Image 1 (cartoon, one colour):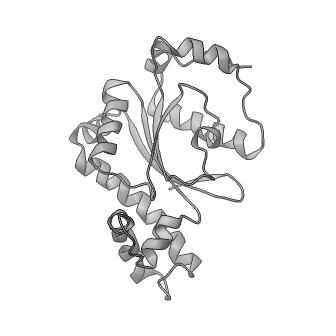
Image 2 (cartoon, helix red, strand yellow; image 1 turned 90 degrees about the vertical axis):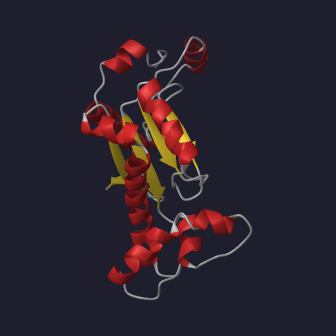
Length: 209
C-alpha cells in the first residue's frame, strides 16, 4: 500500500520520458482493474507541507474520464485542468506554466476522449448561450478534418467525430506552444514534454497520438 507523497527531491530526479512511462504504466493498471492501493490519510497528512506533481493533464469535463484513476495517480501526483473540449485559453496555459516552470512538473498531457459531447456539438454547429463561444475553440479541428473524411460531416458520422477529436488534441498542443514561449523553450531544452492522447470509453485505454 502506498503511503508516500511525491516529494520535490523525487520529482527532480524524474525526466519527461520517465513521467510518460509512469502514466502509461498507470493506465495499464487502470485497464486491468489493478489500481494501486493507497493510505489516503497518510498522503493527505504528508501533502500539507507542499506538493511536487510530476505532470499536468488537460482533460474534458466528461464525468466518465476520471483523470487520476485513468493514470493510477494518487493525491499530489498530477495537476488536472478541465474544460469541455479540452482546449486552451490564457488561464489554462498560465496554469501549465505554473505547473512546469514554478512547480517542477515534467510533462503536459492533452487528453481527449471518445464520444466527446463538445466535439460532437461543434460538428453539428450547435449555438446555445455561452456554449456557442466555447465551441468556437473546437471548430478549427472540425474544419481541418472535413477534407479527409467522407460526409456527412456531423455527429452521426463516428469516423468524422473521431478524426475531429484527435485533431482537436493536436491543435491544442500547437496552441500551447504558440501561446507560451516559456513552455516551448522548456520543451526544446528537454525539460518537459507535451503529449496528446485519446481515452477510449469502453476499454479505459489511452491511445497516444
